[in-house]
Length: 299
Image (cartoon, rainbow, N blue to C red; front, side):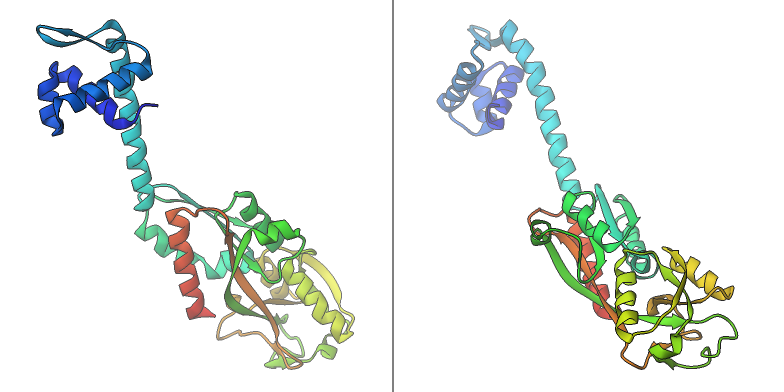
């Protein structure tokens, strides 16, 4: 496509009908404007103007071409405005993924503040396990993800394309049904859970794998009675006496802080994941900076 300057020159000559006046408005010499027009006509392969005593008159080809040039320049101008709007966070979208703890307790306040500051950004949040979130970030379905480390189940190439930034450290604490013998305690030891019915996160999730590893290392036998994804569902089942459960400390309150393990706290590290080989949108860059800053406060 001809460079935009020559297209603007073409439209100016068509409007003025005079090379000299067009050159004056562009602050160029008449030969320079003539050269631009000649180059454009050579590229198009048609004479666009007839040089007459009355000035520059569009040929049939020139009249046809003018309509397309005007439309093309309008589209280019609109495209530039849209890009500037994205850069100024006046439009666009932001898609985020994370597990139950992140989407329920950690990012809503950050998202709320972001939405208040940039209401024109369309937001999309997906609750999903860490492996699925990381895979979706790699595929470009999500701009940003929050995962539990380490990320498992992905090949080396996928992992190499991901930027993984430490975010917050979480602790899984034990919550107990009403009347449980350990309920008034602040700590527990793994042998005290021998034969204990547990309401667990679904198999295959990073949190479940972490818990299974601790339970196996402790050599205790527990009774999995339910596998759920929702933290609130797990808490409700515990409240109904179905069994005990492990949930994030962020899901608990000062009045009900849960029990931590006296044999060594059950900790996990959450990280922010983005594509390292892709240019992030202005919305994604801004939200990532805010999220990492928020992690320093809550971690």
